Amino acid sequence: MFHGSMVALVTPMNLDGSVDKKALEALIGFHLDNDTDAIVSMGTTGESATFSHKEHRAVVKRTVEIVSGQIPVIAGTGSNSTQEAIELTKGAMQDGADAALLVAPYYNKPPQEGLFQHHKLIAESVALPQILYNVPGRTACDMLPETVERLSIFSNIVAIKEATGDLDRAKDILQRCSDRIDVISGDDGTAMELILNGAKGDISVTANVAPKAMHEMCKAALAGDRETAERFNTPLEALHNDLFVEANPIPVKYAVHKMGYGANALRLPLVGLSEEYQSTILDAMKKANVEPVA
Image (cartoon, rainbow, N blue to C red):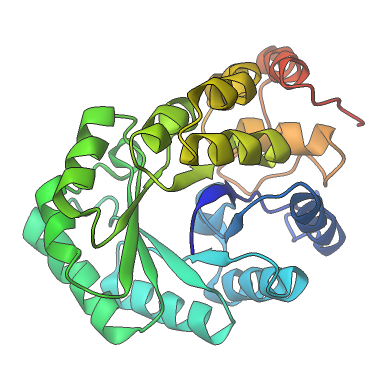
């Protein structure tokens, strides 16, 4: 169900920090028109950390309404509080999301047993399909392949977004439990290679800017067609790299703004892209054949 190019969607905002509902609708329409395979709403790229529960649910619910069943909607519902993650995941199910993306608990630094118990309780508490999310560069917490294997026994834990960029790590998870859960890349730079080695897709920042090319790259890689996948991936390599010149989603928010989808506005403590990097992002867009309109 969850495969191909899955955009980690930015949340367009007005200059006062409120959600730009018109731009959100237009941006989702842009993805539907360009064959994005699924939308992740309210993940890291969507600035979920600065949204109240009420606001969070409102964005997910509106995304579900706009998509109207055309592609899956995956709601970010992770937290470093197990009870909060359960509440957000229940809310996502009530609001019509097709799955939840649950980042490993950040800041607390739980041991592997704590990670297991955290995800076990969420899986047992909410029937919604769940995707584990390992991104130790942000969380200071690394979910090891052994823990993923333990969690793969739960029928509603259906995948893991592995964002370390470590192909050997991802291959280890594939060998351990690919018959029970899917592996999804969370690192655009290594996504093509990982899909060619058995992953089912990519939860992508780059897809915000070049959705059609990301869809075609993932489609070719899923078919085992390296030559075609490389043809689509090569022009995207600058985006894969340069969209992280400052903390995500600062650079991609600037790029999406230049494409005409909302203001270059983020919620504090994030701020707009530094002027010194703006030409870098524009150059990366040009290499990917994306023309700015703003």
